[in-house]
Image (cartoon, rainbow, N blue to C red; front, side, top):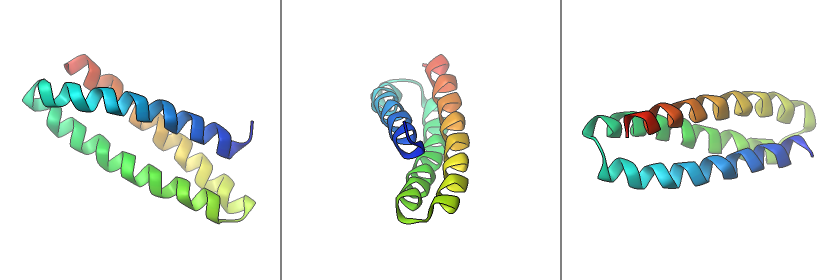
Length: 86
């Protein structure tokens, strides 16, 4: 599996979690909305990084891919915290 394929799979997994939590946040606690907004900013930043991976050379893509992997881990952690709130 290539770096791009791995990142796309991880992004798809996050997308599923994101959709589920979006519904729960709107039905859930008020404090969860603030955390949701913070994670959303990270999500949009990650999506823009992944677009760069497809548009750049291999060396730059690897650097961006590593940063994207770190961002994915942060978003997963944020979703985990959010689930506990709900």
